[in-house]
Image (cartoon, rainbow, N blue to C red; front, side):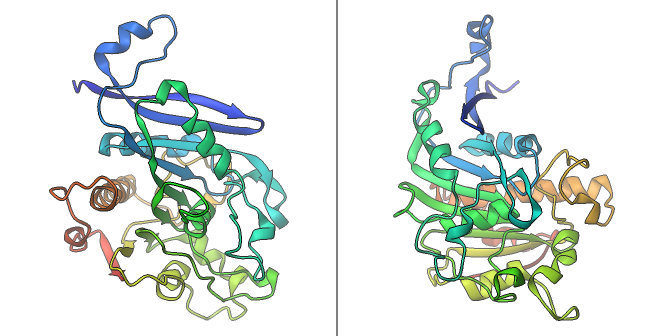
Length: 314
């Protein structure tokens, strides 16, 4: 058995719930007999990865991924907030400031309304004080949470942000705000990894939100990479997974919520392979740009994997 295990603490602030996953030592379990609070493992402070959820996706769907990220060498935090979803009413949200997402205001202030509070909770947690490095923050997210990660990866807004990634997140604007089909620029001030799935039923079913022509090509994640990224540093990547669906980052998928019913049924083995490849890609990205582990698996080497259908970098 590995000496390092993954444990978590649960925190709240008002309606915001945050679960922080961290490395602990198996031999310390006896110390936690009464409280269940296992001490952190000794060592260098670790980067912090924030996982922003998709709309109406429960935070526990990302627990498996958060645990994998701890094994890679990070501390990971999931969050959950009930709030406005705009025209869709109320539900689980990554925390939108819709006023900051209009064509007139985009890029002038943060659009992730809960992110500052999430970071404050992690930074001020005494139990984790020796294990978190708030100078190395990674913004990650799925679907709408990925969109917010891309828009808000700005060190001038959130001190310490040094990288960002998204899965099924894009910056194409909806027809409901009068500029459907346009792609909003993202700061791309840090290394970024944009991930997408070749069999994303939710994005395919949502083309009407963004395009008036039902026959027009609809690949908003690739368009975000092509049209929204301003960097030419060679550290912004787009990778498409052959067996990736919209809900590949989620396991298990809560079929009582969100829009998983739009997905094409998938064999469990294909779903598991896509999740495994997702972890390898994230691990390679983090090791290369955040953890400074040049001996680890490299992103470029993974692009030859048979589970990847397309990729690009700039």
